[in-house]
Length: 126
Length: 282
Figure 1 (cartoon, each protein chain N blue to C red):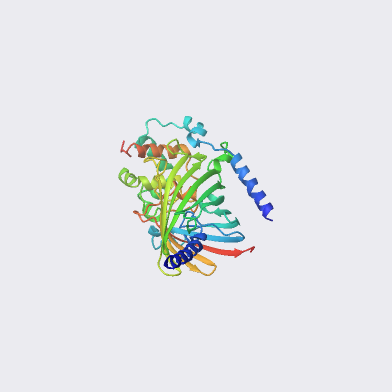
Figure 2 (cartoon, rainbow over the protein chains, first blue to last red):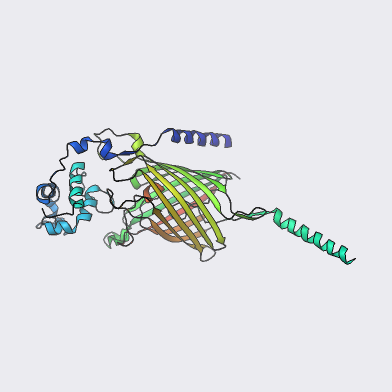
């Protein structure tokens, strides 16, 4: 029994060490994500407003927020600016915030990236 | 006459000294279980004993009454851990966080002792592998199995200072084969610190903190260092651990470097570990 167990442990150890380490990141591993993603001119009006309109405002507009959007409004710049951290967390399904769009699939990586870039650049009203 | 009496006394003293220094007194129960809180302790299972561990972490306390302060959500980790030799144990587990399977081996390098052999600390080494099984967010791209793997190497150095106080330092290396962006490091270096203060015969207060050395200020998501505090309650064959922590994951790869909750904001998870030990072999 002991010999069997030792054999098993040795086998698993060899198995695990035979799969070597990789240093991958999704940006570099899947460059197509970047090439088809236009990350120039990331402004609120040009890039962020359309994303919000297509994916968020059905529940989070000024008129619908109270009934279906948990009173979270994402129509005006000032409301969006106040919630940048929550928005980034929600659309990435990172676990800290309620995953959005609710019960839907995650936004594609390009859209998430645009939101990230806009936030990183200071979440300006431009 | 006087001198011979003195000789006899010295002989007796020698005998006495010999007797005490011949024995090695190993420090036992530096920690009550194989975990301090989330992370491992220097302790391992004795040979032939199987530890069935059931761990829960609930949602965040700040999620309010509607989510019943987090109790509506639950994240689990189940594991079977077995002592093979006096110095070696292995374990396998499965956790909710990223639907991860994990396996580890832990072996004792040094044991704290006094008497014939004086050793100030106990040292164990932990080596573990985790495989996520959560569905790929983008199934159309070429996904690699290697991307699911992460590795942890950890050295656990602990000292039982006295009957009621133990401390532990744990230099840790975490490697993730795939991270989301270039800004996120594949290798994480962390130092863990943990301790235990015995309050009564059966209850002790435990705390644990992991400091990630190469954390960056901008990464694809904001992460925090995990801090956990709680109590060990020992009842016969069980050890209950009640825990308050800002981390949802219960394996090293998850709580070091992927903890998104912050104590300051109230992202605190209540949880517990239950350890039930079965003796399979004497």
